[in-house]
Length: 259
Ligand code: HXC
Image (cartoon, rainbow, N blue to C red; front, side, top):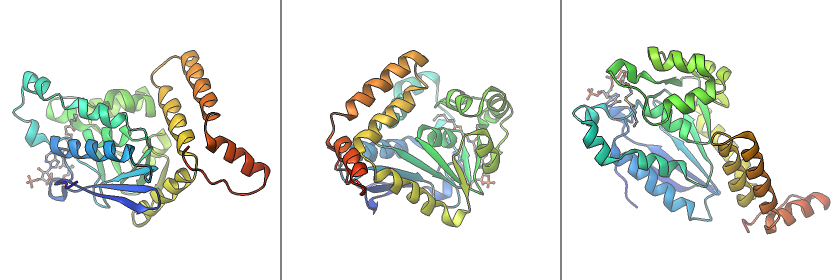
């Protein structure tokens, strides 16, 4: 597949695919084509057994400064309804494989929302997160009012969404938005380290566990517990569960095959 706005490497490391946003002059502003490209590559990689984890990054300078304002400026509600860009976001959210966002520099508006659509965020010390849509007469539309609130709580989310204030990587970590903050030079290496840890596990257990954690946001506690339980039982249908437990008993490292 040839892409205009992203660079991809399905074999960045063993079982790890890398997607790098590539609109540097526009600070990786997310135009519709770019989002479709991310969707297409994730769709293909979801079917590729060689890829177990995806890293999504904007590089060292900027993650993404938001949806492409120039592309949106003249839109009408009805033209937006027709384009239905959020179905692309919904498809990205449905990716079965874990996605790690490696965020450096600005992650604003749709950029922050894209990072939050991923499964976990590792940030560099230069990362800044914000939902500044309020400054341009609109509001978050790709999950900013929902995912940010769930991640950092109502007060901080409300402040960010209503004032447009950016938060630093350190503040984002304190608030629970990002898992770790590292120097910019080692951001990708750190994301790879985490990706490798995940890639060494059973892909089936990883998939079911990801689904279950995500379900915590979608449902009541009781329904979430039932869902978790069924996924837990389902892991016992895999060869990987047998291999994992056998390896423990035999005091050796497991070799998970994704079966
Ligand atoms: C289109 C953008 C852009 C964006 C930056 N650029 N952000 N183009 N859409 N979101 C372009 C600028 O127009 C400029 O191009 C070039 O990138 C460099 O940007 P500067 O503003 O010159 O850089 P700087 O002074 O360093 O300021 C960086 C910045 C600022 C603070 C990030 O660019 C900024 O405020 N950007 C907008 C942030 C924002 O409001 N994001 C939310 C968008 S709405 P030219 O050619 O002019 O030099 C949104 C809604 C999501 O995301 C809804 C769901 C999809």
